[in-house]
Image (cartoon, rainbow over all chains, first blue to last red; front, top):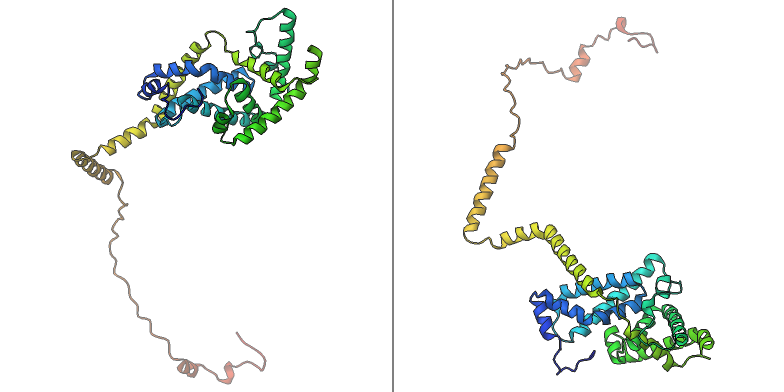
Length: 200
Length: 130
């Protein structure tokens, strides 16, 4: 879905065309269609609900204003995904500069946020409790990664985008994507070691 | 014991099911449209005057040149009428100049001759009389 073959038409071509001609409902439909995916991307990169909300508003506003420049060389989803990644990375840079926020600093809002813990896989209560605890620890581990490493982990492991797609969006080589992923996975492994030993 | 990479991948994959709360996108769309309206209004306020001026000049063809020329002429005339001219200086009645011819001083040699350099007028040696 993320990578469209050149001969395949963009599934959103009609909606995009209508939106380009001023049909706001068509753009609303695109927001609804890709909102959840982009929400997941931005939220896992920022670990902050309000920032995610504000960023999504900015991302869709930017896309709406730039819609006239969209020529369909990539799919609409790839295009808006690229906007989302760039805006979020810029935001993270500014946030770090502005408030001196370190990724190692505990951010309680995200650490205990039930939204980050999966509840779609009910098991017995003990298992569920372990899983929730592990998820919390995983969130902490994610926040301890650098922006660039967290971005590739979010795109690959959470969003399921292939290496080539990530390389294209981030404008880096596939080798760099693989290297960043390798490092990030090792870091997460070490970070989760204690918790894993206690639980399993 | 460390978790395997695959296990970490599975844990991370669980996050794919995360969704914002129910009704989130309806509120999101309302706010999005509100922001768009505000943005448009702001743009109109700031750039409206510029746009109208630009539009007017861009449409300035044919007869409008006549209006523009007339307007410019009217403004020039108004400026001439309104801007105060230089203060007029009152005419002073002319008075004939009283010329007195002063004789030119005699040449230095003649002046020397006219001096009374007799002994009576001379002081003693080394003495100056003023």
